[in-house]
Amino acid sequence: TQSTRPQRLLGAVQKNATRGDPRSVVQAIDQFCRQKEWAMNVGDEKGCILDSVVSEVNPATVLELGTYCGYSTVRIASLLPPHAKLITLEFNPDFAAIARQVIAWAGLEDKVHLIEGASGDWIPKMTEQFGVKTFDLVFLDHWKDRYLPDTMLMEECGLLRKGSILLADNVICPGTPDYLEYVRSSPRYESQYFKSHLEYTKVEDGLEKSVFLG
Ligand SMILES: Nc1ncc2ncn(CCCCCNC(=O)c3cc(-c4ccc(F)cc4)cc(O)c3O)c2n1
Ligand SMILES: [Mg+2]
Image (cartoon, rainbow, N blue to C red):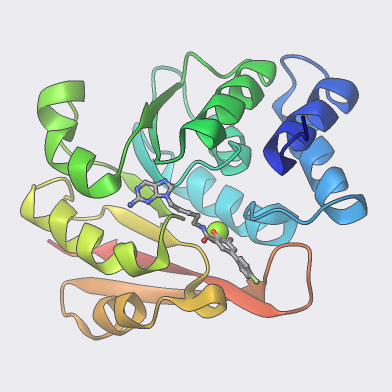
C-alpha cells in the first residue's frame, strides 16, 4: 500500500537524523521538504522567528494548536527550560501517530504532551485535565478559521494571563483575516507582525505575535 507524506517525512527523520538530537531532526525535515516533498511545517525561516520568541518568553507552559508531524513541537520543546511543559493538540490520528515518533526520535517525549482531539473540545478541559492554570505561550497553527474562536475561548476559560504571548502562523498565507483584525484592534492585545515567507517558498507569509494585556 502507498505510504503517506507524513510517513515518508518520518522515514527521512529516521534515516538522516541522530536519535536524541532535536536540531538534526529539524534539519532532516527541512531538507526533506526542500528537496523531496513540500509539507506544511512552519519551516526554517519562520522557525527562526519562532525560536527567538520562545527563547525570549522562556515559557513554563506552552500550548500548540495543530501538531501535524511535530516539527514546531520539536523546535519549541528543544528550547524549553527543565520541568517546562508543552501541550500540543492534533485532530488527525494519522498525523498524531507520526508526530509521536518524530518527538520520540528527538528525545523530547518527557517535555511534550500530545493530545488527539479538536481545540474547541479540549481548551475548556485544560485546567481540569492537566492542571494548567494559564499558558505563557500559545502557538496557533491549526485550522485558520479556528484561530479567532479559540482565542476567545482561551480568554473565557481564563487560560491567558497578563503577559501571555500568542504566536500565530500563516496570518497571510493561507491567511487568518478575522483573527488579525481582532488582535490588532482589540485594546486587550499588543500585536506585532513578523514578515517572512510561506515555508520552503518565496510566497509572502508571516507570524503575528500578540501580548495579552489582561
Ligand atoms: N480545531 C482543531 N484542533 C486541533 C487540530 N489539529 C489539527 N487541526 C487541523 C489543522 C489542519 C492543518 C492546519 N494548517 C494548515 O492548514 C496550513 C496550511 C498551509 C498551506 C497549505 C497549502 C498552501 F497552498 C499554502 C499554505 C500552510 C501552513 O503552515 C499551515 O499550517 C486541528 N483543528
Ligand atoms: Mg502553519
